Image (cartoon, rainbow, N blue to C red):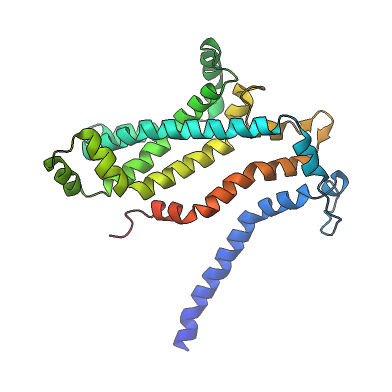
Length: 275
């Protein structure tokens, strides 16, 4: 009887967990399902759960001459922004974690507060700066704004991971003659590699999914997949089937990459949780 009583809370938690997971996954499932419908089936009310699947929407998406251009822009911008953010975030987090000052905590909180600012609040000055520096509709310009947008989160995460690295290990490296660069690259980075990997993955996902700046700072040359998806919204209406097919193709690479990297991501996010 006691064992049965103990199982009930676990079963209840399991049911709640599965319900939440299905609730989160349902929009993705519905997006993929709609991509295989015709436009008439996609807008039918009530929705058709039984239909004749078709690849016409995917054919129309691939038929777009600039589809691979948008994909290349997305990959290049995401890698550029993530790599640049790590190059700036690693030394910043290192100095704050191992050489803290009186204003370190306040600086971290200030950096995080900038991430809470609505992007539309700084759209006009950012647009004017990009225009005056000839960075409008360029991979570099879009990459820089994504780099700066995600930098506070990257510094915070790396700071947390670096704080879990034992200081005596770094001191041992200094006693062996390691300079500052060797201390970071040879001693610190290998120890914090799971945390760095999870930080890079999160930054890559945020850059890949960014839509606000993509729609406002690009037009054709540097437009990523977010702009390509938005192109299926026209004055004639929304093409739900094509929109779903384009969205599925856009999120598929990052979902597959996240699936294969989930062990590294979980390991990084739990880095230092158990001592």
